[in-house]
Amino acid sequence: MALRLVSSGDSPALEIRDHLLPLVQERGTLEVQRDAVRLIALRTDGWVIEHWTPFNDLMPGEASSPGYRHALQRQHTAPDLPYGLDVWRAGAKVLSMLWSDDGTFEVSDFVRGGWEVDALAL
Image (cartoon, rainbow, N blue to C red; front, side):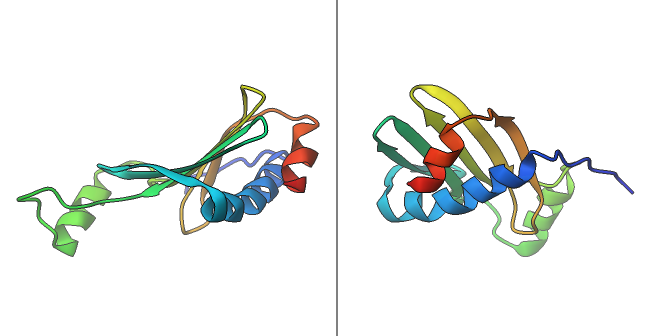
């Protein structure tokens, strides 16, 4: 059984993610929709908030069977984290995280500061 250590700083990151996602989805602009990603971005008042989700149009000739897709998924040693959020404030990246539908998440960048309160006020 694998042990995953969770930082005590993850809770504010999740709270910010949960607050910003509806804003990006409602007011953001679709910037990319190709290959395996759909990227929606909200750019406003010194903020850049980017959210990506899986987007998988099948390539011509690609097998669409569930068995084929499960075989591909089993080739990964760690679960895929298909959703992501990157947040920049005044040109500096302050938050970067990935997550999946099963609740697994990874916070790769989280710079603590006054921007957190500002983000929750958006």
